[in-house]
Length: 413
Image 1 (cartoon, rainbow, N blue to C red):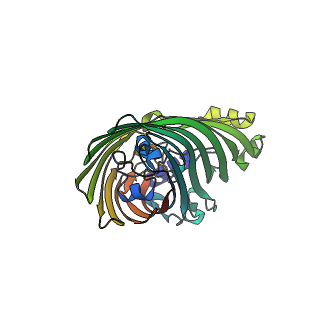
Image 2: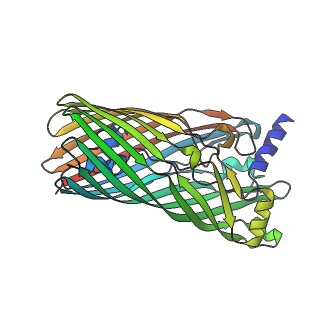
Image 3: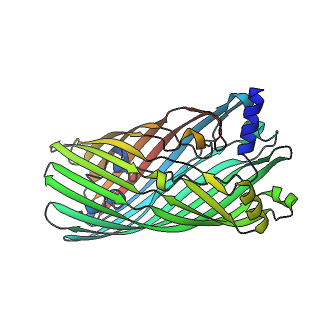
């Protein structure tokens, strides 16, 4: 009887229009150099990716162009013994390209960045989850992406102190396929696709105490985005409504604040340390979907299915990095950071995994005259989560690892 009750709970959580949106999954390792150093880059910020980490670091850099791309490979698993489910995600590749240009005008620098600061995805084979759908093979997939167009300016106030400002123009995209189960009726394919624009700023400061020690501070505002798109669910045809409806949904990416230190005990060795806090509680709390079709709006409002509760919590990452210059041309890098899960057990879902990660990184850079080739690698080792059923989650054992490769090239102009 207990197994049957647990199964019914899961069916109820996968109700007719269960609309789950991106939880602001941040890619906190922009640029292969920063990635190789564990993302501990706020106090160093010495290449084009400073637009993301700390725009004050752009001041004093040579005019340069940086191009890079990261391949993100999530590997997730989900098991739920009461329903005899033991599923592994499809191995997909999610590419995140980045471009940074910095123009040096002496004490003043003007820059432009195009980057992917948030994004991820996961896909499960429907045949592995048919216990939730009465034997019906349906698609289970989420794909999240944000492109940030970011003009920036930095100014050297003095030989030791710089300030920077970057404007963030977010273009968010989200696609999802999942099961919509109506108890005693059947399972239907629910799909949605949406996009939207949002605006924010990043402020940065960098202070060089001396030639061996620098301190950095960076602040990124919360970015509100109104996502607009179309949802599809054939179950509504039985209610006298259309199979699809346009919708709006207000979402946000969190306020982020970070402090960093870079220390050079010798000319060839640099250590970095960052503390970075994301205010998830103010951005990933409750999302409300506004369906434009009256039948969809009425049905979801009456059942409460137009509201999705996340209840994410503020979290701080501690990051460590190191760079050793073997020669004037070759640098080796390594790093580590702890990434605590912001999502509580009560709201965890397989399509939006959230795990506490121990992350190890490495990389290298090779410079030939005015060209620099960079490589970075990181592996996120996710802790398994065994969650009990609530009305907002998918109970069972959740686990996810992520492997990411980053390759880039920089040109001093």
